[in-house]
Image 1 (cartoon, helix red, strand yellow):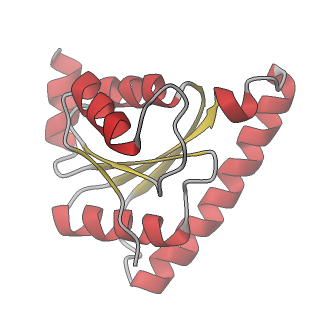
Image 2 (cartoon, one colour):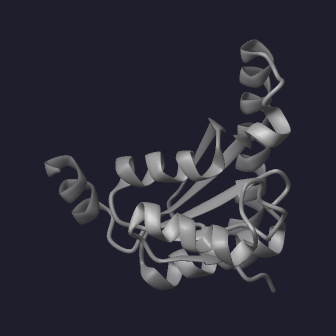
Image 3 (cartoon, rainbow, N blue to C red):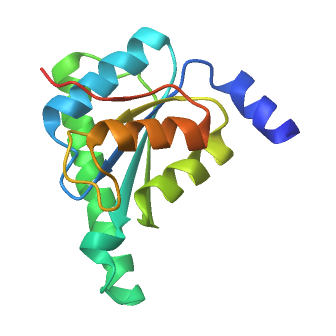
Length: 151
């Protein structure tokens, strides 16, 4: 509990942007950048190698994919920073492998409070609708959760 409180004080206004299975579209990422900048906090970009897309990939190949994805996301972040004139906005990339909602919950447990923005909608395995998924993330994390609306 103490670590979580410390994390909250260190990073007021932080935003967790979550992407998986092709949801990390440029317009959604720009929306996340704008949200983090307006809230005055850092942006954490959580990319999840989800089970429906990567469940059959062995651990060694998953590490290679994660390393390449992190490199590509760093490039995308640098381009987005430049396009939006937000060169000073702190951004951290985290690539994880697992079920999307479980990885979001774990990230929030590590970060402390954050506004959660989900990438552009795609079908969510095990959920009736995008609204049901958003509600499930909000319920499990106790955090404000919404879909990043693009340009």
